[in-house]
Structure formats: C-alpha cells, structure tokens
Image (tube, rainbow, N blue to C red; front, side):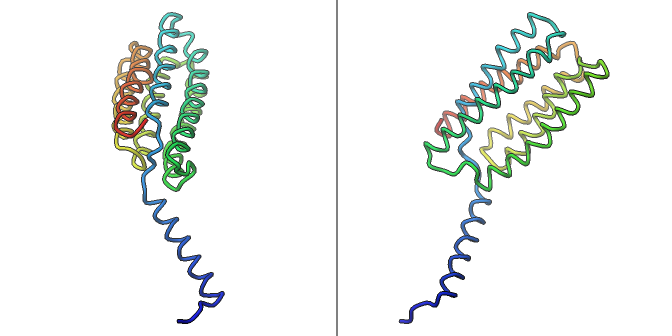
Length: 193
C-alpha cells in the first residue's frame, strides 16, 4: 500500500468537490416552507380585502407594501425550514429557483411603473399574476411539483384578470390570497412544513 502524494490528495479533493456541486445542482430545493406560503396567502387575503374596500385607486398603496411583507415572510419561513432540515439554503437548486423567478419579478416592477405612468393601472392585477405565475412555474421546476401547479394557477388567474379587468382586484385576491393558502397547506402537509 502506498501513501498518496499531496498532488493526488488535492486531485481527489477537487473531484469530490465537483461531485458534490454536481449532485447539489441536480437536486430539488425542498426547503420551501408551506407555512410560509400560507403566511403569504394570508397577507394576500388581507390586502385583497383592503383594496376591495378602498377601491381600485388604492391598488399600489396596498399591494406594493404587501409584496414586501410577503417576501419577508417567505424568506424567513424558508430560512427556518432549511435550518430545521439542516439543508443549505443557498444551494444550487435554490440559486436556479431564484434565477427562474427573478426576471419575472423585475419585469413586473418595470411594467408596474410603465402601466402606472400610462394610467393603465386596471391592467396591473392581471399583469402581476401572469408574470408571478410565469416566474413561479419556471422556478418550480427546481423544487416541489406543487409550485409548478401554483404557478400555472397564477397564469390562468392572471389571464382571466387581463381579459376581464373589471374582475382584476377580486382575481388578485384569489391568486395572491386563496391560492397561496391552499397550495401552502398542501406543501406543508406533503413536504414537512
């Protein structure tokens, strides 16, 4: 039996690091918190109620802070679940999820500005749902299957809101509220919280 040289040990370490990285990027991100999705949906239901009560003129005043709060709830819940499961949060599959969702969110922010400037805020609920749905569907390919279905649901609801803008606020509540709550409970039950 021979003792490996320093060069052979370094090569073995590099090979193991490559294997770990490859396996990590091939896996799915399972630390999506169903309870976090329920929390996001609950905030969405409250925002829906507030915006329906106040009318369409309150759309941005209600929903922009809601998006920020929902993002914070989701981030905190996913970090908590990742720690509980002892899985790395910033894994290869999580990075892929982030890259799948980020372009849709950036496009949504830019179009929100453009539609508001063009006095076409009646199109915002449908546009938000369609872009969010596209991003969630794309990022869901690297996570639990329920996220893909949630994304497709958002796409369908957004299409309805774009085709019938007078239903936009109600459909926004169904999507960002009720759909999140429903899918969140499903993810929590099927994927450990």
